[in-house]
Amino acid sequence: MNHKRDKKELLFNIRDKYIITIAYHIFFFGLDSFERQVKTNKHPVTKENLSAKDKGCLKEMVKWLRAFRKVHKDFGDKEPICTMIPNVKLYFNYKPYLGHLSRYGHYYRNLILIVKHVVDNKELGLTYEKKREYLRILRAQLTSHEQFLLFLNWYSGIGTQWEEVGIGGNKFFTDYRMIHNINADVIEDTSFNWEGIIGSKFENRLDFKYLNNRDKELFEVIEGFISTQEKKTE
Image (cartoon, one colour):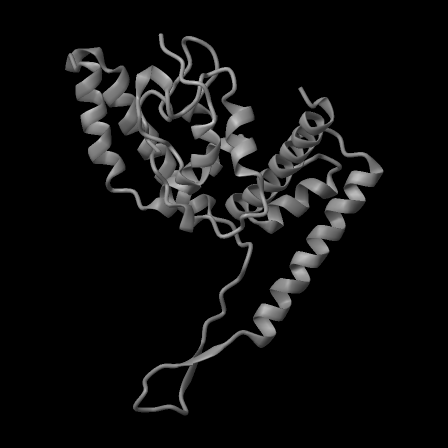
């Protein structure tokens, strides 16, 4: 066993998770909310007290993102309203990092309520196979981008109810496959160690491919990682 390599991979996984989590929190709650929490000396993600060094780093990041927002506002592209009137243009004043809580918060709450109703409602008398069938229909309404955002929502610690540890915890990703075969093309940034992220996160849950003897992979992007795992049976 190469302990030096394992330690290096672990450090990369921790770094990747930290970056992804901060990025998603800004995407979901918005830069203004993120900055307000930094000013109160609380980490926007962990809610722990910030050290002077960490606060300085986060303030510098916020400053950089605000500068990017200003450049976007001042020099954003102007598009013609109509090709028949090329001199009349419309300025799309889109504000980056505004946050999507008002949109996705409602969306995710309704989605998980539907899933819970199918999985947990004993009055329906559904078998596991029937539950999977109904949830497959529900999942089919989600694009690959929506499924990947759902994964990030859970991975960042916001939507923890989707996949929980312990015997009695929800297993809506692994047992009920509410995210499945996300196209690798959806993931623009390949600099993150996605194989390591998935592997370390679920190392105690067998793995996505072989859980309960299933032969379908959850993410195409981790095909190489999954194929190296030893198949386990119950």
